[in-house]
Image (cartoon, rainbow, N blue to C red; front, side, top):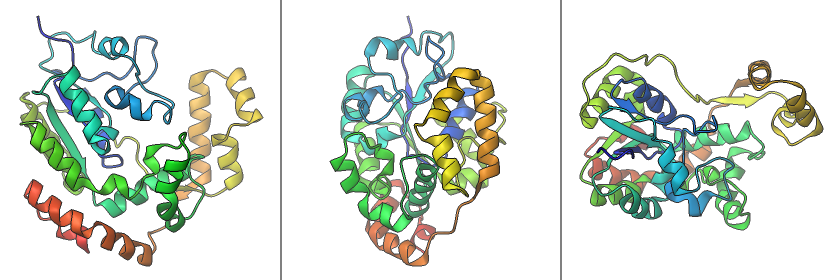
Amino acid sequence: MKSKLPNFLLVGAAKCGTSSLHNYLNQHSDIFMPTYNKEGMKVKEPRFLIKDLVQNRLPKGVWNWDEYQALFDDIENQKCSGESTVLYLYFYEHAIKNIKKYLGEDVKIIIMLRNPIYRAYSAYSFASRTMQENQSFKNAIDSAYTRYENDKSVSPMILYKELGMYADMVEAYQKNFSDVHVVLYDNFIENTTKEVKKVFDFLGVEDENVNTKKVVNSGGKKWKSSFMKNILMGNNLFKRIFKILFPTKLRFLVKETIKRVFTDKADEIDNDVKNELLLYFKEDIQKLEKLINKNLSEWKK
């Protein structure tokens, strides 16, 4: 009997197109990816294999083995099953140990990578639309690690620089698993269908037409009004009353409408900050080039 557990993992990195790739893979008839648990809660990122590190920092996740197994109960005859948790890449030591413990050593690994400067800014822009971030980008990148260390409720997603130091993460997965496929974000955006077909080939499933036009969880936005940000994203009386009076679908529609009206395109990265980050990432990028045998000269400009 075929084990109803993942035989591949999309391990990150965050803000590199993973949500979109998850969506495209999930459309394939021979690939199973859990989206909801038995209670109907959305669980695109189970985070189970790093639960000991993130359970108290992130509001959503699957924190016990039985629940994790249950995510895959509906597998039928699909050749591949997988899940997407972007922090498996950053917390690679813990994740790799648990992948081997719970899923075995034959799991295929998919990694998506983006210019770490733009990845960091995209993560910052996303955090700024929530209550996680209220600082300028410069102040945020300078203080993020200290904030993370000092406050055990802070999300690891604010580790803007650290999450982009890919080389050691990628090398660890390459050393521990025989099948590792790297997708570069720029290639993914430029020719999405081609890159998705490469992933299908890596997973050993037939090419299949899927809708790659929809971009999931796109960023690049900022709030025009801090007042509306606090109303919509903060923990306040308005939100509690709103949650009681209106059903989930209507709340979602209202929230999305408010976001469209009160957000605008994010500012460009300040050149001084960009140059500072380039110096920070440059050596790591050079190491990564050798690991994945790709020319990353565009990342070093």
